[in-house]
Amino acid sequence: MSALYMIVGTLIALGVLVTFHEYGHFWVARRCGVKVLRFSVGFGTPLVRWHDRQGTEFVIAAIPLGGYVKMLDEREGDVPPELAEQSFNRKTVRQRFAIVAAGPAANFALALVFFWLVAMLGSQQVRPVIGAVEAGSLAQVAGLQVDEEIVAVNGKGTTGWSAVNLQLVRRLGESGELLITTRPADGGAESVHRVQLDNWLRGANEPDPIASLGIRPWRPSLEPVLAEFDPQGPAQAAGMRAGDRLLALNGQPLSDWQDLVDRVRGLPGKAVAIALERDGQRLEIPLTLAVKGEGDAATGYLGAGVAPAQWPAQMLREVSYGPLAAISEAASRTWTMSLLTLDSLKKMLFGELSVKNLSGPITIAKVAGASAESGLGDFLNFLAYLSISLGVLNLLPIPVLDGGHLLYYLVEWVRGRPLSERVQGWGMQIGISLVIGVMLLALVNDLGRL
Image (cartoon, rainbow, N blue to C red; front, side, top):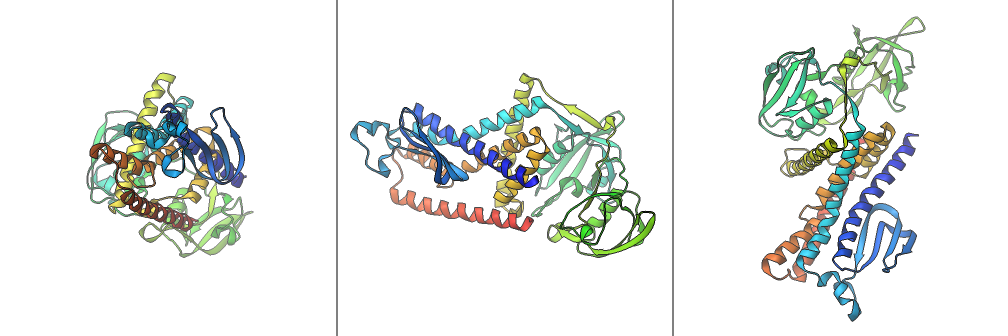
């Protein structure tokens, strides 16, 4: 079933985002008087095709990894004299700029719509209450305490842990002061804590901002009784079963499930002995923990889980907006995520953020499946984030991308004439090489996560 969600989720995600991106180009081109020859969703062999009254061919092709809008252009072939004025190359710089910019603009507009729907649908969020503070950590030095709720990070309100994480991610690789505002979970005055960052998580492969501060979110206590397994994990390979109650790790008693998780994470690739109770009998099972992540980010992995916890009502909150308020919230989220995406790319370029955080089609497919399986709200959030990423990436000033064409048009507007065909050709070759290189890097990162 998960594989089905992954396939369907990926096809919907790519289909919707690519269609809207190309429709942006198409819609503005038509209004600028350009004749559109073909509107294709996907590449390769056409599966379905039809024509409209103006002669545009619409195609759904076999490879759903992109799309394109082909316009009449005298640089690409002979154009009948009566159609010359409908050629893309005959349009003014402003018109050509608008046509090219319309694709990314459509992605940002689509993200805003998705965020608007998510804001109105509402969500149940866990209050960001601190469950534990690691001794000697940045959080402890700054004075954060157990049972305090994080209400703001750098002045931005936080209704749940996802909002806390989002604000922390914006500071990855940076130095300086991080402001965390808290108040007692049962009410009281707010306190501002100043966390001093020094190249914080610079170059980390799989950064965990909350954990790296030395904070563990509050969770209800879970009994260490196994309920599910990773088929490829060491727990199932060692013969553990659903219903097993874990008692000790390497002879040290376990207080609850989180105690086991914390200790396992610190033993990547290590041989351990786990004592458990099964059908009233005590057994001891030796196994070697798997490894998740690389380098300093490597953690131990058991490959087993317990039944979900029942959260106390006071630790949950419902967050939703009316139709008008949702517009402001959607615009704020779109702007924030756009800046975060651009900032992350800048940090990767300057080495502040590891390029191993770059994701490709395999990761996109996995996340699409997981979000589709989780529910409509999560899937819409994923589509919004992906749409913003597509919009930002296409605006990068790299020849072959929309941003590269926009750069050429800006130069043409300043100079009063376009760059030579030779210079534009060099730019296209460099752009293609860069894009292929980034795609290969993302694919390698994907394979490394499998």
